[in-house]
Image (tube, rainbow, N blue to C red):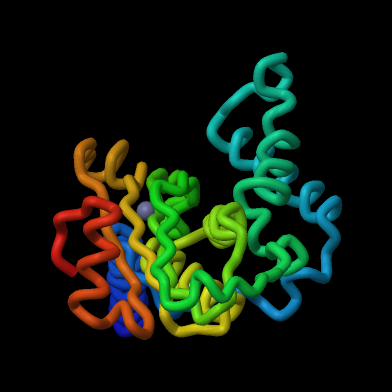
Length: 237
Ligand SMILES: [Zn+2]
């Protein structure tokens, strides 16, 4: 009996330690890979089926919190949140929504740096499911292919509409542009506020997080400096 209790106690302590570790990992915003961790069966359910299920889960959360779902102001919330998750803020999980990758040849732009700065970015922290709000600055050096400027905005938006870690979002944007443009010479800097840091936890309302990913020629100090000068960021990376 004593041994059993001791074992149980040890098990509980282990469980507690694991939970603390997860909590800490979430608060430190440590990501695991540059690919969004997605299951193989992620798209077996249709959007409508997902909305139905999520709606039930949101209702369960609200009921558990003790909210009265017969109240006119609350009774539409589960459906509203479910639709918003599937179609909007997590809509970028679905490969069908990936922007079509059309480029066009423009030999006059060959070797020139193109910068699209201050792209508004709304994403969601995957550790707390709270908003990440900021700006992305994207640049590439053309090898003869160019993309429409709105394409860069759409690529940023597509990858932002997932549960994200800022570093991963940054890498995914660069990788996709490298693929579309057929060049390694792509860079992206993201400057964003994480509401999980600003509004809860340590409640640091001023801080923002800057991440950068440089490919190809952007690894060169002078090229990188030119890009950073365009976007007026003083930060050293
Ligand atoms: Zn977070």
